[in-house]
Structure formats: structure tokens, C-alpha cells
Image 1: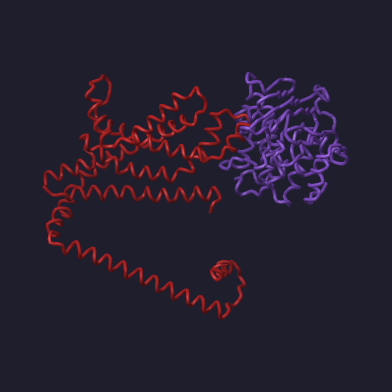
Image 2: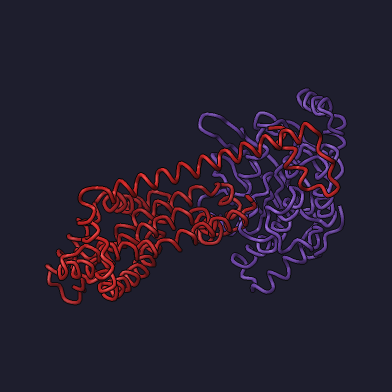
Length: 260
Length: 293
């Protein structure tokens, strides 16, 4: 990873720590005690089969779901505590969803400028200007005035990334952001994430793109049965996994013709 | 079906292929069938109109009915009074519609509040909608139009038009709140989740994300309710307000001729036609903006 841009922040300080996190949906246990840590400027990637709890974990971290047990610490503060200021914690994180979830009645620029304007108190002019800069950065400068339904899936997802970046998140969460895209559109989205990772953004993401995970991740966590079954550097987890289930999962991914 | 598709796609090609004998034969068949359908439609319309006109004008009582309901002289005489009455209807309509939209939207939003704290508010909103959607408008008009002045409270309006407007707001806002609520619920939960993940409060995500989408979606049914209101404003006449219907009634009482009612009815229809076209245009525009067209 690149050197931290701001020398006042200690390198390697832990941004996110998840301790023994449990989440039930009715009788189903989706997360059965997840432990996880993301240090500053680190990219941590969650892999695992569908239903292994990746999305649920990301949503719990973003405080969009109430957790049943365990703790989520953001910069050392337990934000999963019901007494904690949820909104304040959410303002320091941003999430990009698999289904983009752009606001269809707003242009790309309005989508990006909304949160800075109404949540972070940036004046409308400044927010709009920054929105255009961010759209420029994701290669969509020409589409600032376009409504989401006029954009391709890849373009919509790039707008969603710009929208997440607009709040200058301390932690960026990416929930299978290429899973809904046509194969030829995946590259344009992953290129942006790679750039962000190289720029020192702290990222926790889930993906099925193993080649990409290997390229950008500092750590890969294999989720299985609601637990982190195996974690470590990408070369180890993806190249030489210890656990039998990890091996089987990776073999299935390879069999499904996904480059590793 | 295949032939239709081919014709459809070919219209875009500039350098089109010469049609094959097969295509020419099919096109000729389609043309002849279209001609036959048009002919049948024209003939049946003419026959129906003739039967209707002959049936009505040939009826034994027609001369009497024509003199009582369709007398041009009476119509012309009553027109100024009925028009003046209609102006009151229009003012009541505008005032009531504004009140209905505000109250209806407020009720719908109150019903979306979650959590046990808001139970009384939700229950109140539900009770309100049940009550005013169930009560016949004319009875509500009597209760409020005659009951409220009967209380002899200081500062409470006693004007029939004002009380009629209030009643219309109370009754119609119950319907309109359900329309708004359906619109709010049609916005996918992922939209609210996205808003919340960006740090927007419940109020902000409602105002900036959910409601703009909801209102756009329910515009056609809202305008439908508006057309219904346009004619129901005529009911304030039962309270004695001199609107178009009341003016027609007065004219009728003077002339013993019912033509003024027909005049009032025609004016109400003329009022409703533009609203219907505006509704069509607005829903077409909404569809275009959502990319559905």
C-alpha cells in the first residue's frame, strides 16, 4: 500500500474492528460470530459462497441492520451500541450496493451532491462543483446531467461510487459492486476501485472477482457458515488455502470459469 | 406476428429491400382487413347514433322534454347567473384542492412513521381515513355545514362556501392520503436504505428521496381524484352557497324550466375536459422521464 497522505494519522491504526458479530434473520443465523479488523489504508476482501453472510456483514457494519450480538468498533468506538450516535457513525462510512440504488429522480450530479449538501452542510454550489469533479474522476464528466435510467449498469455503478466518495468516507464498503453488471462492464468499475485502493482508501468489500481480489487486497477473508473460516494475505488464502472448505469453494469458482 | 415485426424493423432502414411477392400479398391482405374494420366501425356508430336519436326524439314525451330541458332561450337567460355561480365553484375547488393535498400528504406521512412511540399518531390517522372515507359526502356536508354554525362558537366561520370547502377537504384528504401512501410504499426499500447509508435522517430521506418519487408515480390517480372533486364542489349548494348548481336551481324555480341544470352540467363538463388532458400529458411526461417510453 502507498504511504498515508496525512502524517498526523498513525499508519496501521485500526479503522474497523468487528468482534464476535452475530446476526439472525428469524430462525436463521446469518452471522455466527464474525471477527475482523481493517487497518487504515488497508483493503480487506470478503469472499464466500452466496448466502455466506458477506452482504449482511457489510450492512451490519454500515449500521443498516441491527446486530444481535457482538460489537462493531469504528476508530475504537463501539458504534453498534444502541446508545451510540448511529447517524454520526454512518456519516463516516459509505457503502456501494450491488444494485447501485441511485436516486432515479435526480441527475448523476444531484445524486452525488445530495449527501454533502444536506448531511455535511456543504453549500449547494460547492457540492455541485465537487460532484462534477468526482464524476470526472470516475470517467463520467459528460454525464453529470444525465438521469440514472439513461446510463448503463457500469456507468450507474460508477456514479454510485462517486456518490459514496462525496462524503469523504473514513471507511468505504463495497457490496459485490460488479455482480449485477454485464461482463464487459465489470472492468471499468474495478479499475476505479483499484485506483482508490492505490490512493490509500480504507476499503472493506465483498466480491466474486477472485483475480481482482488478489490484485488489490491486503487481506482476504473467506466467510463460511457465518464465520470467518480463513483469512490472510491474498496469495495464501486464494493460492494456498489451509481449510478444506476454502479449497472446495475456490475450485468451484474456477470450475465456473472465473479467472483466479 | 413475424410479418408485423419485419414491417416494424424495416421502417428504420433507409436502403430497404424490395418487398417479396409474399410480403406484398400479406400487406394487401392487411390493408383489406383494415378497410373492412373501419367500415364496420363507421356503420355501427351511425346505426347506434340513429337508433339513439330516433328513439329519444320519437318518444311520445320528447316535445315536452325538449321544451323543459333543452330550451335555448332559457339557457341563454340563465347563463350569466350560472357562470357567476361557477366562479364560486372554481374558487372553492382551488382552495379545497390545496387543503386536500397538504392534509392528505401529511396523513400519509404520519402513517409511515415506525415505532411504538408513534402508535397514537398512526392510529389517529387510520381512524381519520376510515371515518371520512366511509361517510357519504352529503351527510358530512350537512353535519359540518349546519352542525358547526349551530354550536355558535366565536370566530368559527358560518359561511356556507367556507364550511363546504372545509368538508370537501376533510373527506377528500382521506382518499388522497391513501393514494399518497400507496405511492410512498411503492418506492423500493433499497432507496431508503441508500439514503440512510449516506447519513440522511428519516425526514430528509422522506422529503428528498421517497416523496419526490412517490408523488410522480401517483400523479395520474391524484388528477383523477381532482376531476371527481371538480364536480363534487357542486354539492356545496345543499348548504345554500350560490354556486353553479344553486344558481341553476334558482333559475329553474323562476322559469319552471330545467334547462339551467343542463347549462350547469355542460359547464362542469367543460371544466373537467382540460384537467383530463392535463392528466394525460403529465403521466406521459412522467413516463418519459422515468425512461419507460
